[in-house]
Length: 501
Image (cartoon, rainbow, N blue to C red; front, side, top):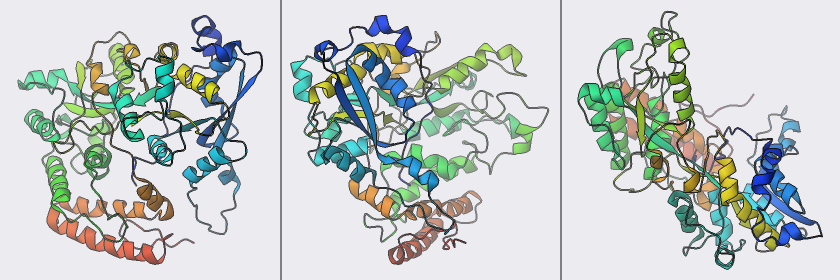
């Protein structure tokens, strides 16, 4: 499955009392003033890709304060009401059919009562802009002298690229990002210079090999795609290492496999050697019982980085809260020494400079080209992308960061290289054709999954990379042929058709 267009559900801590706590701060937030001073109540309709009757989370995050300070009533309308799927009868083995969110959004925008604002992901934003369904924001930005210079490049430049012709068709108040965390002590003990911003994957892996040491439960691994015990290198490498390369598992028409290639061979060679050399952890080179025994158990047992068993690993900004909490409670954790750490940018591939993995733009806010209340819509978009809102939102301990650089500051009084989170740009969104394929032929996900047993054979030295990729290609081509006859077919990991009972 291409996770560039799959729904990205984040756990975000809400600030439900924000309206009552910040009335003074945001009393004059309506930058234009026209909406705030209007005697006639305005109705602003916001279209979202999906939702249900419970829109309390979104209202707490974005609309409650605006409605409190302006004579505006906001209606939230989902393109797809997900609650209906809860009540469907699946007893007759009816397969779940992925709804067409994009077409649902178009209906909301072009119907008799069109929505004013569209909230979407970057892939949908791109398609709506290409079909001229969105108002360009640049004229309004210039007229109101709305300051975008403080918005981090990872957000503003990405949105301009998506819009085409360097135009903005949406703004996003938040983004989420990952970085390369490293343990300073591990590098100091080895006499090796720690990682720096802008390193390539190969440079990071070279350092990882140099600092790996020890055996058994005392092994210190040089690198991991995450902090968890029992990692699966096959899936771990997909989002972080493979996605920026934009390698295809099958061709654009989903007719032929494309994995038997020099690029795929290099990927599998690289990651499998790291696992077999125990430079990266995997369930195949670790004894889980050693880590989970009663003698070794502690609140951080499942976290290799906090346990001092990782020199470098990838995580998001929220992980900083967990490091700080563990360090603050070091005296309560058995055999725990506070971790001395810092971060640098995600590694990059030389053939994809400046592109980082695990980076996402948050909800984008755009104006329907047929919006009945375009002026009010722009006023709201200015509000949620303005300085006052960023100041308030930056206090939230969430997985997302605010897009305004001035309010991106280290957490909990820490000092670290926070710039590492916004130096790179995300992988471009999937094309409309790719999204349609994944929606119309859900079994394509199984083809990616079917490569795992072949990779496992490489890890176990049962097959060479070349032979394993060739076998995956052959199996995948049979699956693609089956999907051509039956687009709704599903498969087991071995490539056999999954029979529903």
